[in-house]
Image (tube, rainbow, N blue to C red):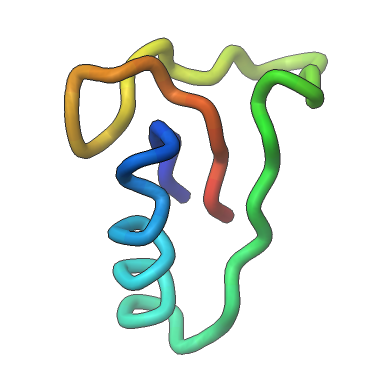
Length: 55
C-alpha cells in the first residue's frame, strides 16, 4: 500500500505491480473517508501532500 501525490503515482503503480504481480486499486483520498484510519499527509516518495492510495 502506498499513499502518494499525483506526480509519484506512476512510480507507486510500478512498484505495486513488481511487488505483488497484480494490478492495484487507486483510491482518491479527497473523495474517500476511512472510519478507523487517517492517511499520511505526505507522499511515501517525496514531501508533497498525499492524494492517492494505491492498494
